[in-house]
Length: 148
Image 1 (cartoon, one colour):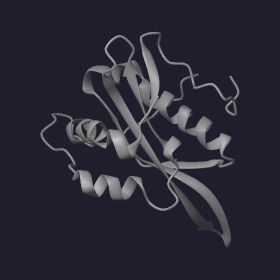
Image 2: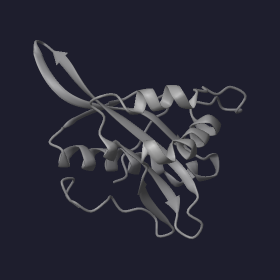
Image 3: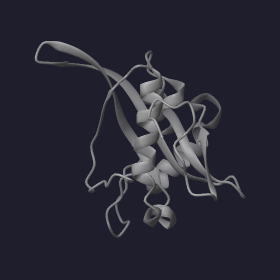
């Protein structure tokens, strides 16, 4: 598969990609982030943001609607993963580069063993490349293995 392909990155057969319209589906994304974003190993600590804050962050003037997406179970349409990216301009050594930061990625605990995180990041890259953006950065407390 070419990363500039117009077709989404392949998922397991029972799952599908979905776009998340922040203006109409924010509550669904908010609930997933509220329950599964940045938690410690025994799930006793989580980062929690208000819906107003998330809408503000996700809809900055330069936001790209295609950078808000998720993964659903085909049979039930349950949202099991959400990711959001924000375009940024970074000055590195005097050169300004257009980049995307993957800030908010959450996967329901029951699906984390399915290695969806690398697939989400590959899908981010595909979507970015279609817009002519080639740099992407994230922060994480986990090792992320490439899917190949």
